[in-house]
Amino acid sequence: MDASALTQKIKETAIQVGFDAVGITKAELLEEDRAYLDSWLSAGYAGSMNYMHNYFEKRVDVSKLIDGAKSVIVLLYNYMPERLQSASAPKVAKYAYGNDYHHIIKQKLEQVVSQIPEIKLDEQQCFCDSAPLLEKRLAVRAGLGWIGKNTTLINKRFGSYCFISEIVTDKELVYDKPDLSTHCGNCKRCIDECATNALYKEYQMDARKCLSYITVESKDDRSQDEALRSTHTLFGCDKCQSVCPWNLRFAHSSNHEELKALDFLNWTNEDWLNLDKSKFNRIFRDSAMQRAGYEKIMTILNCLM
Image 1: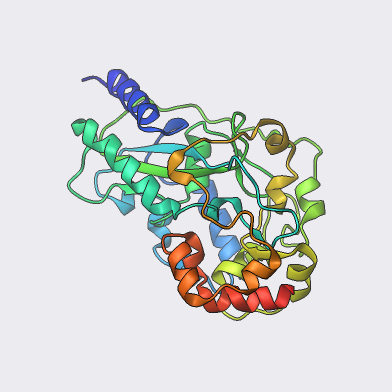
Image 2: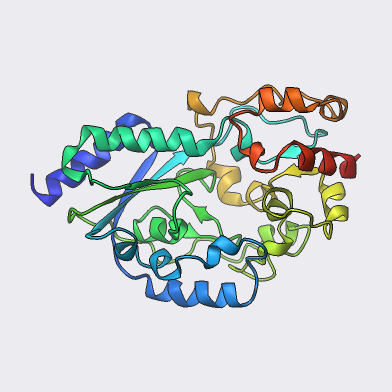
């Protein structure tokens, strides 16, 4: 099968499996992104996420992560939920409404590979936020959108509420053309609405100040308690995405059954405060909220109340 036919087969199969968009880019050194990442890490903006410093050369060059890699298939999976939480409830980021996306997406990636033996490798080749890859940058190079001023990937069809994943293969394919322009114009809503000034200037984020980092990654940072209270934020933060005109206009419900929301969307403040560890582990057993854990969730809840 020639490169053109194989490329077409990959894209058709990925859509049939349930992905919402597919693009392909060459596995090579991301020279400009290498300089940016080095500068960002040196400034300390990664905070306690020490893993971001690991495997630096592999992170900026997929061909060093997997021997013989020639192409990266990048896939988007829309996660915009059909229903939202009550406006008065402690806010949980939309990506964590359902079960942990890592497992859901990984299974779908493996389905694609199983149906196309030509792209299968003998080693791990399917990734979703699970390997040292610059996923957003690869998505841009694969023609799937641009990096917005809020530092998220924005797609013209779906906005920014999309999971990004990859299949790496040793086959040469037909590569998509990236959209190297940005489409944010003069808009600065994401920057203006950031409660902690984590978006300290356009296209730049100090993760240490981000409420998503504070509630998910950081172990004991209490520096943003006032911002947590004022925004009623419990886990993750969508503010810079929820005000984005691209999301307000184009983001729509994914209707992916695998991402069906867990049983907490109608919870009140009292329901959250009455959450015991047994119930937390039962309801959020397969949820991304397990990354924070029960004790941290309750610490933040007590801060909010």
